[in-house]
Image 1 (spheres, rainbow, N blue to C red):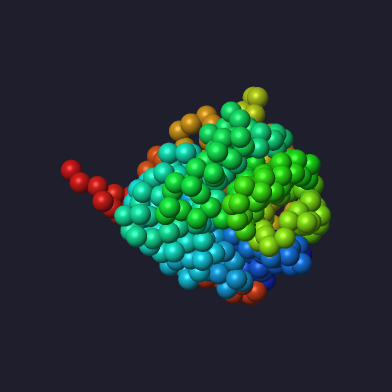
Image 2: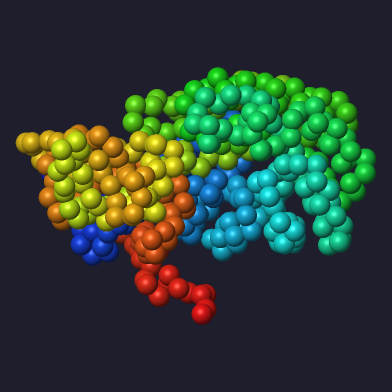
Amino acid sequence: MHFFRYRGKDFYAEGVPVSRIAKQVGTPVFIYSHKTLNRHYEAFHKAFSGVPHIICYSVKANSNLAVIKTFVDEGSGFDIVSGGELFRALKAGADPKKIVFSGVGKTRDEIEYAIKKGILMFNVESPQELREINKIAGRLKKKTRIAIRVNPDVDPRTHPYISTGLKKNKFGIETEEAVKEYIYARRYLKNLEPVGVDCHIGSQITQLSPFIDALRKTRELVRLLRDQGIAISHLNLGGGLGITYEEERPPHPSRYGQAVIRETKGLDNLTLIFEPGRAMVGNAGILLTRVLYTKKGTMKNFIITDAAMNDLARPSLYGSYHAIKASKRRAGEELTADVVGPICESGDFLARGRELPALAPGDLLCVMSAGAYGFSMSSNYNSRTRAAEVMVKGRTYSVIRKRETFRDLIRGEVY
């Protein structure tokens, strides 16, 4: 559930009409609902309230400091995939003992930074990485905790670009090889402490069955490792729970929690770790854009907006659907049109073949479900300045990222 809706004819973010934000901040602008962020965190936290657990928000979904701070205040942990994300999380006040470091390509500098900060653990993705972490920890005279990311070869039934748990994906280590690496680490890599098993199969998953299939395989691995004398105390089930963009009906976190708790019954002294990202922030944000022009062609109609694929890449990258609503509800004529941006690419679109009210230049459109992988994937393509970001809390709002300027575009460049 989120807190974006019409009140009368005007579209609101919590208690603020989005037209007021457009007037004072300009467009395009990402707008986030503080109340929605809190609600979504609580939904996950309550789903696992009966067992030891850590909710580690996946920073890559939306890395704005104010968003991270909102989750810090709720007691959240964090899943990071870069040194920059670690820096952001710590800057926002995150507890390093609740941070897990994922990703297939951690650099030496990033590994050293994380060890020095005392993070909870690394999710290790390859045998070479395992040995590199051990080497760096030894040089620092520290012992660091690790989990191996196991690839269970489970089809998540999602877009192939966001599937991560199949043998053909670049992520993780196949189960049989992972067992060998755990045993090797325990015997020979004295600067590592194997404490966890990690499994993440993909993103925008809308059924429970892929999670359960992966969990059952991973559960047996935990038992096998414990039988080998490896004290596994943490089971990281990753993220991936989907959201509603159009007609999807993903399971509520409470149903997911019930299934996980049922399937892990009998595994004592185990802390569960979850890494939701999209499910926490996706429907907690919108992209507000202004119509620049409308254009009628013999085959298509176009609505040209000041937001583009550099602001929201998902439609162009994945063919993804985002609902679009006019900021003012109106009756009357509708037309079928493509909503496109100013970028010089035919792939620059926010929606295709969409039924919308008859719009005019200056009208505002709300692109829904833009809180995840919106700003975090945005770019300066075509030398476009990146959008502002706003956090709404009740009847007030704050600019949590200023709109970039032309000078920002050339910062650091020399000639």
